[in-house]
Length: 342
Image 1 (cartoon, one colour):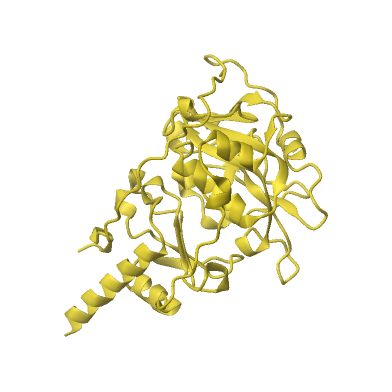
Image 2 (cartoon, rainbow, N blue to C red):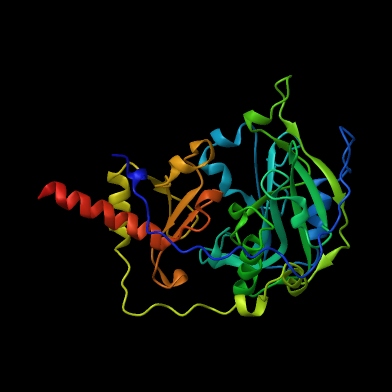
């Protein structure tokens, strides 16, 4: 029996929280094969990250070819200052929504404990997964990243330096039905305006990758986190309050998690440059679109996650899964192994 066949504890789903405060906005998209707005990656970055501190850097990643076949190492990326050579018009080009500070070793790292501030908000997969009538504010930028699929950017008036508020803003938009669940996290990448989508399914008849198009570019159109939250119908202040750590519970040993996942054929490798992070195959990968086995990370318990550990799968089907689901999955496998050994 496949480990993926294990069904986690059923959860009572919260009622859908669709945006209700502001009315839907109308956006004008380019028609047919009209040429997109000229917007270089350098100009985009200069507007988004204008005035950042001397001790923080934007973060980029870029590589050629099919995203599904790219090695995990390409996602490590590097600081945007100076502009990396891997950012090219014919590459898959990505930018993180946040800036980052130096780690203890003196090097910049794209990880949560080095987070410096949120500079923009990404709404992903408009058109293919999220309807355009979910928009409640006029976008700062709209980029067509694949045929009939768009990414929406909201630029912030000032960087948000409170990580709880920044995370609450991102998660609130997802719960409001305005973005694909895979777009969560402060370390999230979005596609830069100029670049190609190398996924094989988006190649043209000539075998060339899809070239992105910028439909809207209004860099002066900026918002505060509170304005965005109000437009999408959620209380940012209430959502930003830290959750109390549960008492009387002890996380399962991190080493046991890794050992069990490895025995089940679901462990891949530790992730260099990300504290306590391990690349794994999602236990529920068979339920992913195209049964994709990439994009899942397990974090060992430490002070950054309240001693609970962490689980993040970028696929929308697993948007509601957390470390509690992985704990239960691990426990189920251990119980099964114990019964088999008895």
